[in-house]
Image (tube, rainbow, N blue to C red):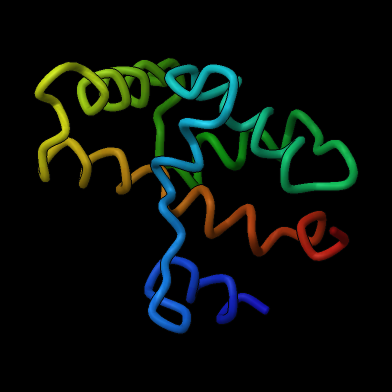
Length: 112
């Protein structure tokens, strides 16, 4: 199961998931708390706990306690006029990819 969802990142029949475009469809992707809430609601048929949200935030995304603004700064820099650079994209994907991979491997995702 994990290997299959990983193919969404590396290529499946010549197609990959545009993770940034997917995140951009959420209600407030610059807010990491809201982003995780929205993704969980979109991906899982049941709600996840506060402990799971914290794990996704601080372990999968790699954010520090009280350092959630790192995501906001990276997201806003990428989405600013002229900010769509390789460096900004890579910074966003450095946090977004592990988070999505982890969420795709959660048991709650397998229920959907």
